[in-house]
Image (tube, rainbow, N blue to C red; front, side):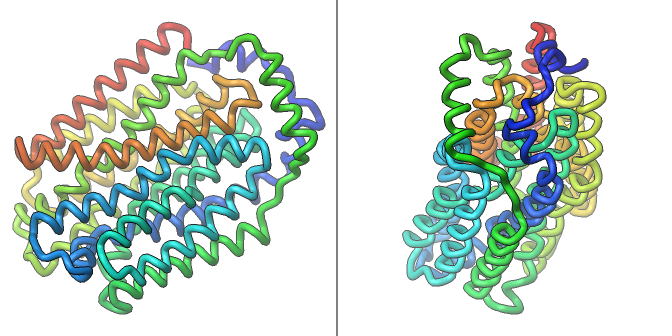
Length: 417
């Protein structure tokens, strides 16, 4: 399906509008944001393979308590980001997108290093929460690129950006499976902080933005006051639910993956390393297809790509319940990464076409909040289903949720979304 009618009918941007003034910068900004999103998410997710070991090192002894505190510490960052993403999106509209990137990078570099100095598990959880509240570089990147890239290139640009974010989020565990053996668990956090510091320097030095607070903020307020109806706002809730489902589907296996791999006959000493490899396979699949699927959304319409990717991801999820060797799971996770990669760029593109320009930063912030909510809810659902019903049931339930989400999006498309 083609773009919404109101998007097709949109006049070209005013020569002095924010989009027009930043037309010369968005490609370079995209490259920096891809690098920054990759490094920050590698740093945040690389603790997955050794998180229980760090929790135990901080004084927790009971196996049940170790699992519980590990889940709380892991989800704290995404919970914090889910809370503050809309706030940062709104502030980006008022004060500029680059300051939000710089704030996120510097804040995350400091907090990530402090995690390596934690004295107890409470400090670990609070610092992980602070990383989410203060950080959100990937969220700020989507707001910047989503509002700077020309609408006809938005799908491709957001696809490229999504490649960096997904790769970082899923290669992180692979790095975390190896790095502690070289620098120690605490040293791993210092390395992560240094990586984010490099991204902060690149952002300060290379990202360009033509933002005039007096012109852009006032124009945004005037446009907001003059707008009587928000175009196509009925589709926004469905898109937010879909964004949450993307991360929910990807993260639902996280609490059980090490145990599941262990049930496939992998020796205990190799579990962390093999789990990191399996998690990283989704990233490799996503890197292959995210820009292509984003460009496909520019050509055939975002709704088509969203519905198709949801169904394809559900189909890729089901065989994961029947694997007998860990490498089979790795191949299927790679295929799932290829299918899921087209969702977030298409959703973000459709959101941009469905709201007025002055609202785009705020709504893209809500979109990030929905995604990180999925990262919090996914592990909780996966862990509970795995404990109460069985490990293989996690794949069936997640596939069913994806199919229902595809039905919701198909219904919205037929309504003229």
